[in-house]
Length: 277
Image (tube, rainbow, N blue to C red):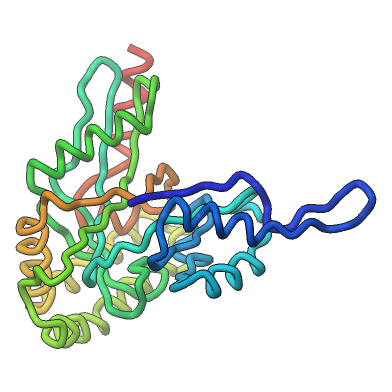
């Protein structure tokens, strides 16, 4: 999606202790770059969806900007993107490159799904499912990874992607909502195991319980029903994918591994070995 970064804080202090308010000028720059439609203002670093806010017009944008302050996840400036009217899911796609090899896109992506909010982050209560990626999207993801990585010889990236499905849907929203509700109890059990204190005391035992709970979740017929809908939707709209974020932080490992079968630790070790050999 179109993105604007303004490297200037909304409020700045002068040497004499006064304040300069820049929200009007920043709003002008954002709307000049993105147009007059809905705007998404977000921190410069990943936050599990926290701090990501919609502004439907200039007035709302100014209100959002006035509340924006520098922080560890947004040290300077303002980042804004055009709003993409995705459906009930987005995709997390894994791309890895070892030294001396072409980039490789893992064949399965993790879909984050739910109707709770325009944000589909799992930290906000949404579900995760596995998705088979068309070759078209895998090739594009590899190219995007190369651009982001620049001159790096080995790397691992998780690319977040949205598909503006618009009216090209292959299922009714009410049906999908009903199927997701059927998954709630089992997925709650997955999250309970995921946050259990035993992770640090007995990792092997904790991991076994986590995998068992996730397999139980996947075995529900509603999981396969929603998975099929997302797979068909991705295939139908494969030429419209938009990458909006890149992530290289290990915090996303567990659910990605469970959903896609991609052990990111193994990918990272392969990258490291390729740099040594």
